[in-house]
Length: 119
Image (cartoon, rainbow, N blue to C red; front, side):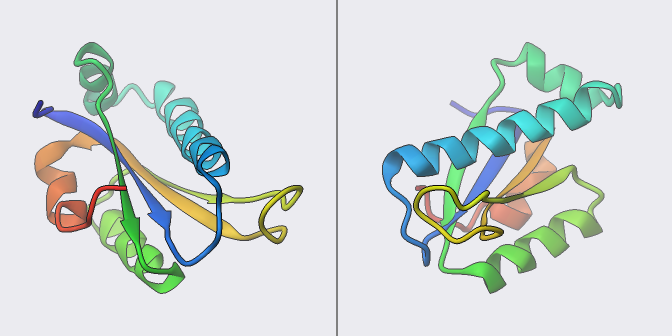
């Protein structure tokens, strides 16, 4: 299904996270983006809410690539959040695990993340 608006969560593949840990990190990114955007009253957020809240989870090889994607999203003034883990289970404290982008128009997000493989 194609969405006019979506969130994209970018996961680092160079750190060892089990499926549950990864799901929790993705959840943190989604929650941060929603909490940050709900008060901004941006049209993209409202449209995303009304369009079944599309989310896509993709992967990058490592931290460098994650920061490159973040920089490109920020250049387009897209909402972003980096998730740094508390380090209580599988990774060291402060480890950047995922990047969340959006909700934003797919036409704005796709040029930045559309080439990344799905998780």
